[in-house]
Amino acid sequence: MKVLIVEDEQELLNSMLVYLRDIGMECRQAQNLQDAIREIESASFDCIVLDIGLPDGSGLRVIEEMQKKEHQTSILIVSARNSLDDRLTGLNIGADDYIT
Image (cartoon, rainbow, N blue to C red; front, side):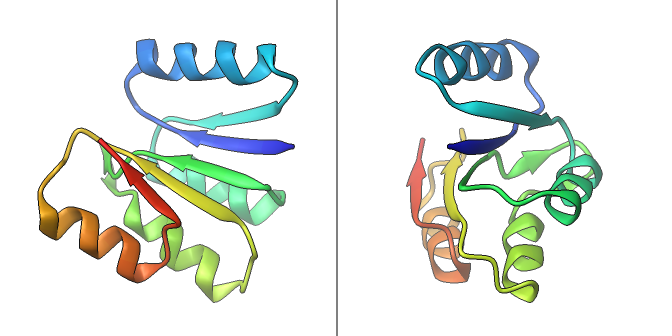
């Protein structure tokens, strides 16, 4: 399984990378919106683990870009933002799940 992790907090990113690689997943990473969009334009992924609070914009744009390309990629939002509005927005635009 090929996974893209989009996370700007280095410690959390490293933890996710170590865990997913240990269970046999191939992982790529992006720490900002621009790099995430570049990754989805250059490769296909089975799953994207997505933070929405990125330093250069909202991670929700990644979902919008995926929909333009009609990719069938699972998207899991992992975010500190836990308001109901944030959850509903993420799920309504195409995320498969939202974890705080």
